[in-house]
Length: 541
Image (tube, rainbow, N blue to C red):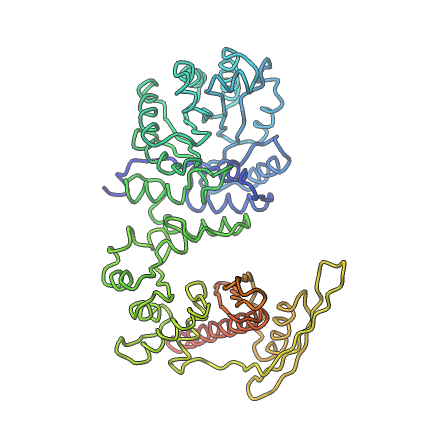
């Protein structure tokens, strides 16, 4: 089936509304605008921006998009039906929806009679009137309607006749989309299939059905796929599965499963490779660590650790990969650890631009050194930059940018103050010159990092581009108390790359020193390689 003949599915992203209900997630107006524009770039056709009128942030968000519209996506305003015993035209909540200026509005109504009587404290008849009046009013104002049937599956199981009445009311009032919501996330795929089929058989053929699933049973993606296979044409979900409680259907899994496995068209074929970058972009903007083991887009999604796996995937990726990583913008990674074999070392070397011979004694020495260090507490699968430096040292190709000749750290802990003032003094040899520098910092590691940068800055001014972005400490053998070994992982980055280095010692400062020093050294190596490549390119021209 070609891309042009693939059946069209409509992806509806609710990261900016449902997704922001995740515990611990908070976004500014600027954050929401950045995410909306990235989703627009990805090719998402419907983007739910929030509930205008519910809070000032969402009101301003829609105002901004009126002034600077998206390129192709429909921005959608979200709202509940009017209040009981009111009229839609007199409801201020709906006036805010109209002021948002969107062509499409998603209206949520109650499907479960339990929620009508216990939640809304009204009658089932009045609930139907609320649905009808709200949709008819918005239609009279020129809006197109997506109707989200809240708690649809639970309501249908308890009272199917009434649940279907709510849908029929929405349809007769002018809703173009009917979206069935598994709001509590308790429905399983076989139930989704049966109930979606029942709905399609009970509604006019020109009405389009959508699906909105939550992940409380860890089946949100499976439920979304089951609904599509039963005839649903719209899937609502969020990037990275963000959402209240256990989250929503993860569009980073839904989209490639539908497009690559089931032959549906969700976004353009040339946009699909943006998926991994979009996932990581959104996690960065909302300030949540990316799920490294997420399907399709996680850093470990195509990572291979076992020696037999590595040798097999090197010969034929189909042996241990269900798709080509590049199809979703990800990449294959060979993980280095104490479980590694020669195949891991050879494959990893190639990713560093190093060609090793399996029969070269140095290859075996690198592997043995790796295993010895991992037994001491090092962890190179999380610190690939340190492993590259180890490999280059074994091959006598490790560049010497500087040499640490010694350092001292002095800390002043003042009772009653939250911060610890620290002073670090460091002696460094750079290009045959001994440099002695001192710097203060908020804690010993910050002071040490500042002193080292200060000593190197005149020789390597591009160090200013390096940023220490994460610092993790792990006690390896806690049963030995304060003399336990400590592993420190330091993540650094420049303007376009990230790398992680590791240090291990019974002295936390010594472990931190190792990781920080190697982090700066690796950054200098990357800069040197980039300059060499640029020089080669210029001379070639």
